[in-house]
Image (cartoon, rainbow, N blue to C red; front, side, top):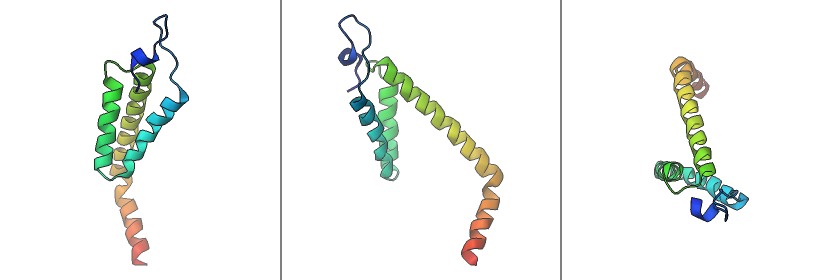
Length: 98
């Protein structure tokens, strides 16, 4: 789907990735709607596309950037839950008990 040979022009330069291909890549995120299994399958597919040897350079760069952002937000979420998790839990418990 995102192979460099398919996207290469006659002069050997990478051709532009079409909007249809980007939309197909974004639709893979719908796998996350399936609990646990969908997320694992999505992660495996993204890692294969992002680090595959035959994948177009522009697609690889986009996937790697998305993985870096995901890692940053995961770390931020862990830090926030460490510092504010207890107070949020108490607020939710108070709301349910009321």
